[in-house]
Image 1 (cartoon, rainbow, N blue to C red):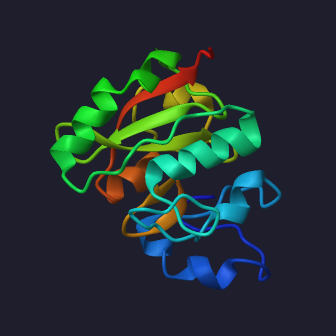
Image 2: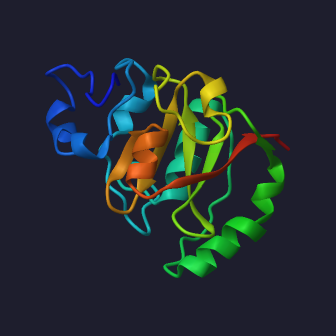
Image 3: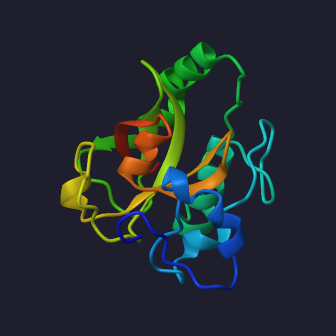
Length: 178
């Protein structure tokens, strides 16, 4: 992504992304990056993949397929307060360590109000933005969050596009294993 324009060939996926340009939602600059094949897949509350996902199911899928990590299934409650409590209290959180600077494959916890209720995966596939926000993003040298949201399905967003769509980064988390 350069400025507010997407860099995409006329081929695979260009039509699918056109309606999202005004929201700053673009594929990673490197069209050969593994993340580009998932952009545009739809969100579904009970979606477990590979054609429909909810946010956690998509994170599980990406972590297994691209980082060899086996993560547990977590229910997707419709009640946002229940979702926030689930993210806060779930035992899976103990396997992830908060970090200031994200790296490819780190989880990104997101919020639209007071409590985190959404999660995505950090992708190092975009050049630095001139207007970067959020802890550690400037030092990370670009990149963005690949996530599956209710309204848009799977998207790649840099910090300003997340903000434009109402998301704030609540934290970056690195897998510690076990």
